[in-house]
Structures are given as structure tokens and as C-alpha cells.
Image 1 (cartoon, rainbow, N blue to C red):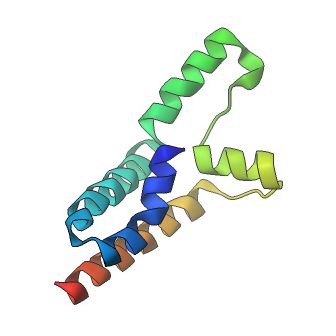
Image 2: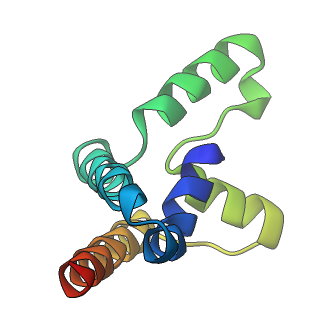
Length: 101
């Protein structure tokens, strides 16, 4: 959850704190890369493996974001939408950094 908060709060934080821009860039690039390579966060996969060992009924497959959107809001979001959203966030971050530099 903390990673998602850092990711979503990145652009506003970058606007007010220029020192945060490289950190946000690394967070966005890492997130996009993991979504493209593994279709999810490696930490989420490890979490799911531990959940499956402990209590298989609590385990889930796929993306953290898609799972909790379905669980909390009953909204089904394909994994591709998450990747596209992350790419848009990456593009906006790049544009923002270039315009403010």
C-alpha cells in the first residue's frame, strides 16, 4: 500500500519538492518495468505465495490494484489498463520534470 501511495503522491510532491523528482522517477520506472515484465509487482507475488501457504483462501492472482479494486469497489479492471495507466503516469512525470527543469 505504501508503494501505491508514494506512486500516486509523486507528481504533487515533485511540484513542491524538487529533490523528490528523481525518487519519483525511480518509483515510476520500477513500477512500469515490473508491470511489463511480470504483469505485477514481485513483492505482491511473494505475498501471494506466503498467503497461499498459510491460508489458500486469502491468496489472489494478478495485480494488487486489480484485486483490491474488485474486492473493495466491485470494479473489474484488466491488467492491461493498469499498465497503460502506469505508462501515462510515466509520460506525465517526464513532461513535468522537463518543463520544470
